[in-house]
Image (cartoon, rainbow, N blue to C red; front, side):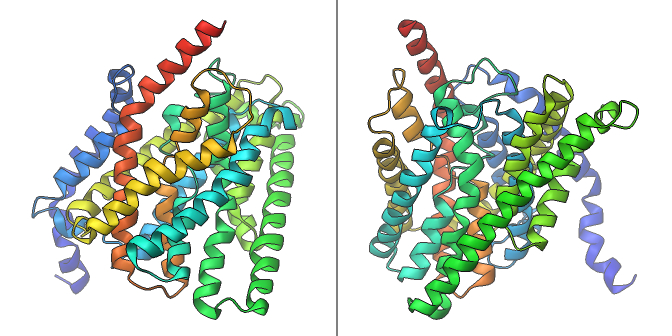
Length: 423
């Protein structure tokens, strides 16, 4: 046997067990949400538990992802699921692009997110004892609401009757703050490399803020408009919607993301904006629902796989060993104090239905988007104590999955009862 064959031998031996595991998990993705529809539990919790259990066995442990040993793989795996999720988020939003509809989203982005980053930067320095640049990277990674794990509190599908203010605010926030957190990640990288010199900050502002955001917005808008014409507006025998193939959404996602990244823009922003444009080009076509459904199914499958691997990172990948009292304290402050308080401040003065303000403020779910940003920062800059910071990030995500997963269903019921009483 060749050296390559010998190295693959353990994986070949596990081929059939892996097929069995993949089949069972895929069936879980379809079936479990029906079982848990009214239960205070979620599919992400089960996926993490399955991963932690499976990779705790010696036979599977060598195949667990280790964030320190495989940071590039962790980054790219999380990146893929986030862009698919962002396209799905854009495709499900029907509201017109005006201030009245988007005011809550703007408040969350302009007030809650910067406050969260500022507070978590100071918390990282005080509780974890790391420098400003390192604390800023951790804070920027944890600032965005995750578009993948927050599906239980977001708009369910295009034209959904559940498009209330809370669901819309959390859907639109998750769609945009994944892109808007990127400048702060780049700021942490820039400060780690060159300090707080004015020339360094000016270079960061021009590149990471002005150029990348402008390119991402422009290409997302133009790409979504052009694809809308190709899908819906060409002559009947050539328009793409005639195929009925929902996987067009995946092709659009990957193409727009790659073009934007090659053009030095933020692909996350471009994909979400393109989704919004495609939705507006539909004009009642059921093909939009097909694209959304395919994006949603792809997202759930990728989410399942990555959360199983996240569970493996916890049990066999060393994340549990990286968690101490300081990391746990930081996580509790981030989830129970910083995000709820920042969200509450951002929504001050807004007229909302009963319980909507606390629900929006509380459900700042952290997840796979944070994994991507932190891995990206570690891969592109020099930061102190990455092992400890991975532990802090991991425990924040774990608590968020458990806490928000068990409270999402009761919270949505509470909102429905509040709207019923108001009506």
